[in-house]
Image (cartoon, rainbow, N blue to C red; front, side, top):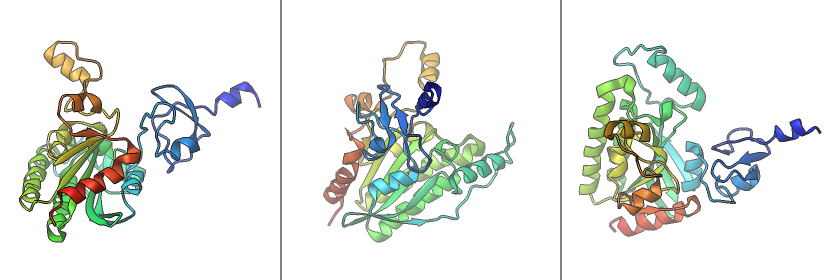
Length: 279
């Protein structure tokens, strides 16, 4: 085997998921270590050298948190209320998202079982139009909250999103108020809402339900904010602290409650539900 062919097996990647055919080696974007892909997969897609958390798919997230999972509202799909036309039509973008993820929206919602505890789980899929929030995603969250109230269960939302979906304009922005009002109803029933923030969580999602959790957890190194660093710098005209939108910085400033490694998430969320959920 020539050197060129040998080194072609090495790749730089921000993810090492099991739902795609991996190369034999994965390069960590943080420490530049070359890891055998099975070693990374066996550690929940975390670099064994520096504990960098690779991005994982929505289905892998469900598998990580749930022993069993039953999906609801699978047929809900977005429409084109504004007849949005750009370089590429909204309908075309939706079709591409469906083809890429085999799902009609950027949210998977349903009932999960974690050890002996049933709960409602909502997971964003960044592969579908950047996990953007539209009217369908807001409706799915609302229905999940209603199931929580009907079944006396806790709610867990795993966010990874670029924000509200611009192709639906006000229809999308209204989901911020819609989901926030529904969460108030959940709070009145004294049922816990645990918000898990993963990389990245931005825009209308971070400006609404993602920061309304009774407990807000983030994965190590996750980038979380409203606008990106470049936009903020242009707006305020000042240099920003290094890493000011990372989970660790937000924890230091008191904006989130804890930063937990992926291997500890399931047990941590389980115990939080047991503590917060009324008997």
